[in-house]
Length: 335
Ligand code: AHR
Image (cartoon, rainbow, N blue to C red; front, side, top):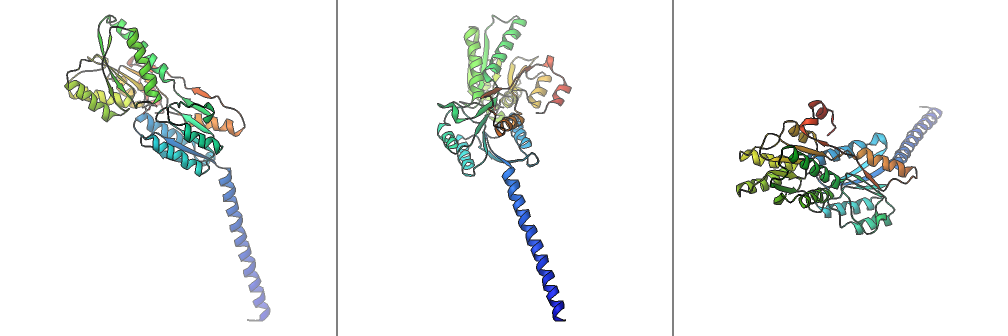
């Protein structure tokens, strides 16, 4: 090969390399820029104890997606507050843009939320509430009015007993509580407590812990039935508890629901809960809406624009009985 030809070849190779390397560098810069533009959300979820909780997790996962400019970091705390505290500390270390907390219980958050505040990371609380000495430790909360849900259930029971002419009869109530110290437990329990105080003929036959799960409630109701506990009403603090109670009653041959011996009151109004309601196995299902993903996204959108979101956002809810339900309504619901 002639020397001049060689020189041209070397020049061509150099130009190609420069172009390729240049391309690599600019695409790396682009990736870094994209990453910078993404909003990083660290979400600490309670666990997967109920159908409601699964719907709540899905709502968050479906909202905070890459196509919409989010990177979601997710931790399932498996029902342990310590795991939630560790997750929050990890999100602080990772310098996420927002921390979203679905707290298992109301108390015990002051220290870790102060750390988040000092790191200038806004904390958005969803579903259950928190009780902190300094309200500035969290930016906003969105969830249900659990006390109002309890009151709704009690008002319904008052009306139902009147309708049946049993308003002065002694009514034995079994109360199945959810996770101790969770807002959903505290509010729904407070509603029932008020009902018991108002009606001297309403008797608390037993109070047991159902932990918001079918398995635990099945166990405790079976135990009560074996001990011969009288019961006219089982007040279950969520749908999965109601499923466990019904399972135990059916196993022992005790009828329940609209045509049965034991009334079942439940909360959540998930599709499975409403199906039981339409079948007449659950008498009343008070709604508790888990679709918080878009709500949190709208709070973040406000914060991104420099706006101040409402400190508290109560979701409006209703209740269902066999009378106001239909299969079409159940099918049209998202959870
Ligand atoms: O905090 C909401 C409650 O927690 C729901 O009623 C229940 O199903 C869930 O586990």
